[in-house]
Image 1 (spheres, helix red, strand yellow):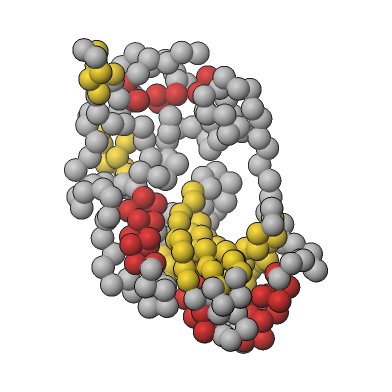
Image 2 (cartoon, helix red, strand yellow):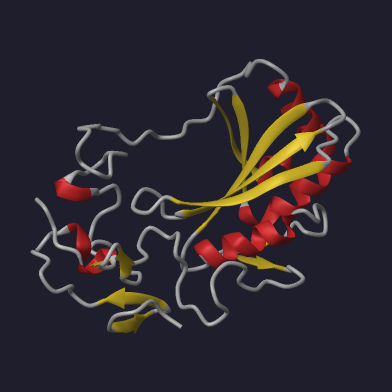
Amino acid sequence: MTAPNDRIDDGGVPVPVAPAGASTGAPAEYPPASPAGRGMFGIQGSGDTSGFGGLVRSRQTIEEAPRPYGSYFDEVRDALEEAYPGFQDAIEKVVVDRGELTLHVRPEKIAEVCQVMRDDLALRFELCSSVSGVDYLGSDGRRLHVVYHLTSMTYRRRVRLEAAVSAEDPHLPSVTAVYPTADWQEREAYDMFGVVFDGHPNLTRILMPDDWEGHPQRKDYPLGGVPVEYKGAEIPPPDQRRSYQ
């Protein structure tokens, strides 16, 4: 099943035909033609997708944090390195930003790292409270990032793990054997972003119909939808609206 309107299939992602009444460069034609970070009215490089606020946001490169990190972050990093012999191969970088610790993990090692984070007596991150996806279209070759929020109820600490995969090979080991709470969360990341969690007990869509094509929260997913009737007027779907530039 695809969203309404005439569509063609392009690699499993539905692509809209040019909407009637939209001028060249109009927001209704984007994505997939636009570069990442483009909003309405020609706005680029900004979080201001409306174009009215005049906001400008430059992309920031995520750099590895120098030691000491502060807080309990050094203890967590050292405990993981001591407990996990493959630490140097598994951890790509350690980032401390806005008072949060993020360990960037090689995709194939994520389940192993989670196992150590849960079981080691000096770590004891017993709860995985969230598994979510992020699409960094146009800024990273491995554009699809999966973020795991872990909580230690023993030590009252929080840490984030982040693993990145490409859209061409979006495979990660499932962590459901370590954290059963990740079951439905991994299904949502699969449904919305197309990340395939190898070893998941039932990796099926959870929000969209089973026969839906594409993954709606990828940033190159086309605009679409269905007309909405409101107070006697019909509001066309986004890819058929006029552009105001």
